Image (cartoon, rainbow, N blue to C red; front, side):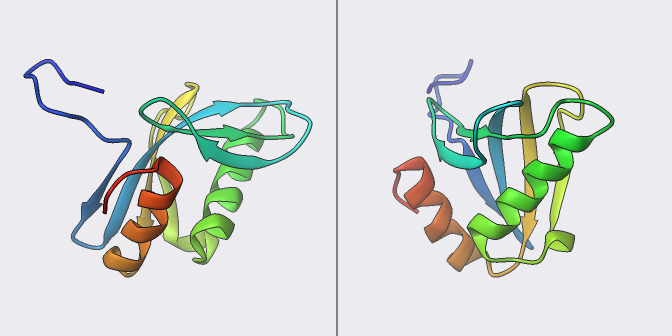
Amino acid sequence: MVGRRGRALSGWRTTSDGIEIAVRVTPRSSRNELAPGPGHAAARLNSPPVDGAANAALIELAAKHFGVPRRDVRLIAGDRARLKRLAISGDAEALAKIAAALYQAEP
């Protein structure tokens, strides 16, 4: 994916205290899973998009996938949108390796 300024964009990036990832959510799916997508991860969730249930399920799924406690995963953008940004706190290098595998990119 290429941004407006011609730079390559990634679905994830490292930060000072962990990583941020872009996720496209599909609620009311038959199962919970996190898979690669075009420029972002694709999260399929059992939960409906009602009263924050899908957001809570996304946080739980991301925490499980990245091996961190739920308290270390925060929704930072897209509260009511399908495309969301999550901040995941922890060892940035270890989290970057997991994100690179998920996004099928170099860390």
